Image (tube, rainbow, N blue to C red):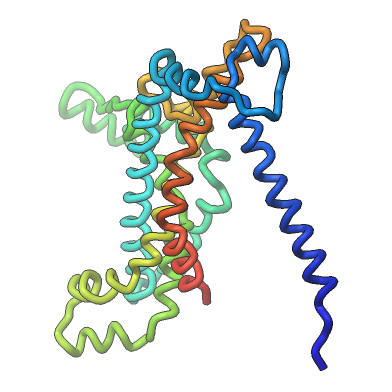
Length: 304
C-alpha cells in the first residue's frame, strides 16, 4: 500500500517557500537600499524599488572608505586560517588514528575541548597572550625560580616581549585553535579500511610516504570541505579582529563595515553601508558557489 503523501509535500513546499522568502527579502532590501542615495533614503526610508545609485555607492566604497584594503586583510586571514587549519588538523588526526600513541584519547579530548570553549569565550586570555607571546614563558620561569638562576648567571632575569596585535599573524593564529578539523579528518580516517596502513607498510611505504601517496589523495574532498568552512569562518570572524586590531589598515572587512556607522550621525548612511555589505559578501558567496559540491561530499564521507 502506497501512502498518499500529497498533503505532506504541500506542507513541505510551503515551509520551503517561506524559508526562501525569509532569506531573500532581507537580501532584496539590502540591494534596493544600496541602489539609492542617502538623501533619497532620508526622505522616503526603505523602499522596494531599485534605484540608479548603486554604482555610485560602490565607487564611494573604494574612494571614501578602507573597505577594499580591509577586504585584502580578510582574504589573508581567511586563506591563512583555512590553510593552517587544514594542515594542522590533517597531521593531528593522522597521528591520533594511525600511531599507537598512549595518550591519544586524552589528546583528542583536549582538542575537542576547543570546540566546547571557542575563541569568543576565551578572547580575554587570548588577548593577554597575543599582547605578549612570551608571557606564558615569563610566568613559567618566574614560578619555577629559573629566572633567579638566570639573573645570577647573566645579571638580569629573562623577560621576553613580542606583541602580535595589529598584525595579520595575530588575527590568524588564535583562530587555528579549534578542534573541528581534527574531528572531521579523524572521522574520515575511521571510514578507511583498518588494514590499509599495514598493507602499505608491507609494500615498503613508510609513514611519510603513506601520508603523501595514499592518505593525502584520499582526503581531497575532506580538505576541500574543511577549507571552505574555515575560509568562511575566517572571513566572517568579528569579535577577535575587533579586539586584536585597532587600526583601520589592519582590520578586516566585517569590522570595517561596523565602523561605517558614525556615532554622531542621526541617521547612518545606510546606502553606503549596504553597498559595502554587498561588496564584502561577493567573496564568500563565490567560494560557496564554486566549492559547494566538495563541501557536501567531504561532510558526507566524514560520517561514521
